[in-house]
Image 1 (spheres, rainbow, N blue to C red):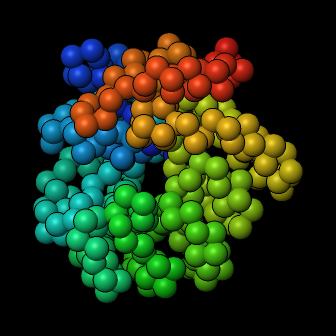
Image 2: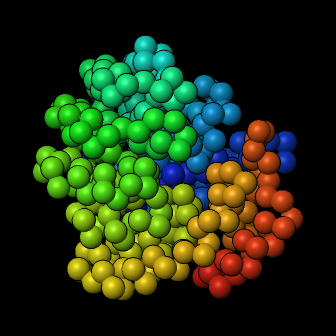
Length: 294
């Protein structure tokens, strides 16, 4: 799917001190990320979708539609572990202006591969939009195997997978056997250059909230076939990546966004803002980049 090539940023949801949605912060974020990303992902895990109400999610989606500085494509997250509820949510959602849906593999239930297939088959049948599968075993406690992904890729509405398994062999199996019009998207920031090298379409990124220009450079060099320079850009994030997630996502990247003057670092419980020791480490590691605004 051409619209989903390059960097998709999994947008954080800025909050104020009262833990209400900070729409000015969200507008700042859209402007900041538009400098280097290719599409927006609204209400992924990074957007703290688990702690936003239904109405809040729709308010964020509508705001992104209305304040999209470069009119970038929009992917909206609708997923869950109750298949019928996901189907109902898709049918009820205001999807005008949305280009695709991101749907996570069912979590907690730990379904079989057949259960995962039937879940997404039902979603594809109900959706008026293309579907991006989201495989993130570290959160769902189950893996979508390469065989199941390829089986789902045969369905017309399922156009891509965001692969966050961290299993490069599995990703290579998808890359080597997928249909030509099915996209392999990295769900791990540090594997972006590797995914481009194996023919992947790009990344849906957390760190692109703060560093959109680094991801733009990774894509530019990869498109030229200069994977040495692409890797050098990727390596800039190597030391930063780990601490970003030590106390939960998006705790780390929100701290960096505060330092950049984009939005505040507040999160909603059960997530808390970064501890003092983590703040010191992240600020120290990102200091070389903070004056560059991404």
